[in-house]
Length: 267
Image (cartoon, rainbow, N blue to C red):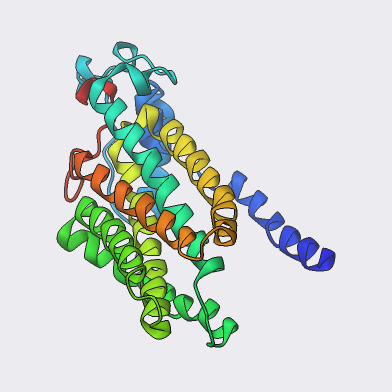
């Protein structure tokens, strides 16, 4: 086991060298007033793609977009009503779909079925979903996919509680909940990045990631509730997913085919 941990850790080491080759976001440079660095970054991107680029001038940036007109601190996540609403709901969503996904991965009822097959089966859907989800997002939008996936996951798990004694339907409902939780996770990551202005995007995403880690940490603890009653873990995962899906209805705006905001003043 220790050898496996060393191998996994070593495989991540080469990624550190990408630090020297991946440029900072040009939009972040603009939001911080670093016009020259933004032009340099965009020029290199345009050169790589073989397209013409006209440098951005300071006169083309309106005073409303001037970074000096926007404060940039963690408290801004709570200072503005729209940002505060999106931030709290998004953190709850990340907590919910991560708890549901990891909880179901490790606690799907197997009954008399092959435990290894039940564990691996959802991954057969997860791999193609990585290619299908962007297409669905561009067709119906980020919010409908996130909301629908979480609600479907919650409903499927709660329905499975009514199928006591029917082993195959219960297992299939749990596997379905795992797959749609993965879809919610993938959609939530994209939606979270597009929902917040550039100057707060990384901060909001970091807090959402912390909420997700809390959900994944608590998922095995919830799984241990089967000592009290076998239906408790699935019931908790279902309620958390359903609650997150309902709350996500209040996320606004839908970011499909919309330019993401770069400044707090636009929210």
